[in-house]
Length: 117
Image (tube, rainbow, N blue to C red):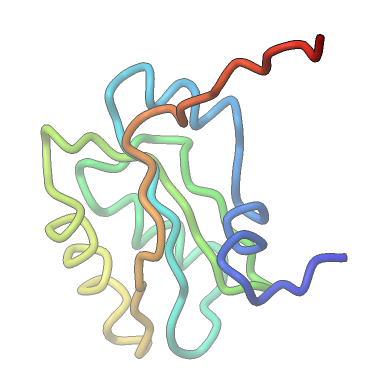
């Protein structure tokens, strides 16, 4: 049973395998962030994230109950710091900020399982 507090549960709540696969194939990164402050509406959070020019359209995923948001962005257009700063400026009037806790930059290394003999 998921606790909802650990990093793994927060990632799972907004993880979209098809989105991650597509983003990483384009050499984009996927970031998972904690929403700090009063819980914003989904619409307000989406508007703020999409206001950052490096964010991929259609990539925002929100788990309001876990105060978690994720999105894909193009690191060749802006660093994560610049992207987050732009989003935080859009959310500042609502006393909300985002704190990144995981960034996916490349597919996980998978190891082959050798059959038992």
